[in-house]
Length: 347
Image (cartoon, rainbow, N blue to C red; front, side):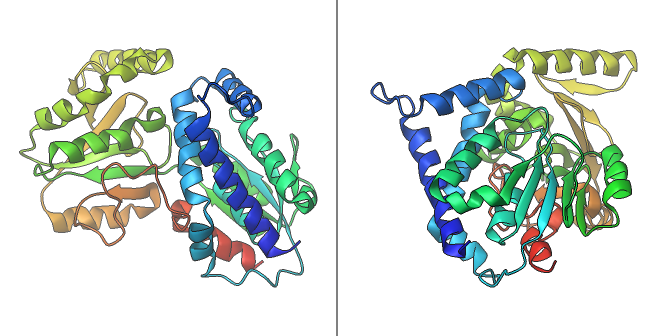
């Protein structure tokens, strides 16, 4: 299967996603009816996957799957000489829509075969996109397989899960080449000098996908004299999130637990702020921690880098993420900082 054929298929998928996102509401459009049904079924299967979040995901992928961006990303690798394709088992998480799609792309564009085990929370969207890809490049059919059971006859594994499931992954897959991902979260560093626009953008990092993604900001670091009113006023634009039933249930539950435990909390009616050294805050909660100096905070984050997916800040780090951009990663932004494409090409 020629590399150019694979690449062209993904570019066509990007064009299709762009067309769908821009024209799905046109009265005369019936060609998208099947895709609309798939999105409805995706939300019925997992009510966290609202139509808004599904369309956001599709829009991001349409922006990435362009010939220019794909070619620029892949120019760092030698891809045309893959004569011995490997079968790569992929255990996909289901916390946000298409969370395993980047691994899927890497495997196929590296010339390997994907053996995918989708999450029970995200089982309809990826197979639909696969059907589209196969229509564009029929030879892909032999390189894509979905399974419900245990992996058999595979050469390497990419598995994403929690800290608990990672132990099982390491037990079952430890003898094969692997990438095993555990819990990670994004954090943000505030100085008190942020503009209202920056803090509003931070709300996108906190609330997109209801905070369920590993790139969602679940904790902020603030100076000791920080005025939380600045943050709450900026985040007020996201107040309607409380109308999502499952989010509201989590908000009520976590608030009750904190109050009964007599924890000191800050609350604005849809988000609970709690001082905590941990990174992974529950849904509808945001942890915060005070810092004394830039130097000590940088050292602390360096010591705990294995728990951090990315850092939102302005002028603190070379590879920091700007406010509002955590859910818009580039093709070269690999999960956990592990170059998936390099891993696949060296098998």
